[in-house]
Length: 106
Image (cartoon, rainbow, N blue to C red):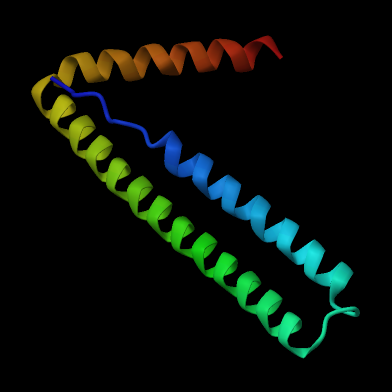
């Protein structure tokens, strides 16, 4: 039987939060860059670069999680089809009929 694949909505929420932070930091950096001294400018630039690196790392982690979940789902689907070939054919035919009916209605 197929087991439920856990989701990581926390990772997605963290990524969105990081991207919002990147945008806010970029806007602040652009607004205040003309008024910053050498050290303040370097500190703002370093903070912005750290935020971008963190967002990139989060994107990579999220991508890896999605790839892993996709592999698990594909394997579970393959096992189900191997164990229940006629059910799979029936399900595929039913889906095809429904899609055909929807297309014919247009």
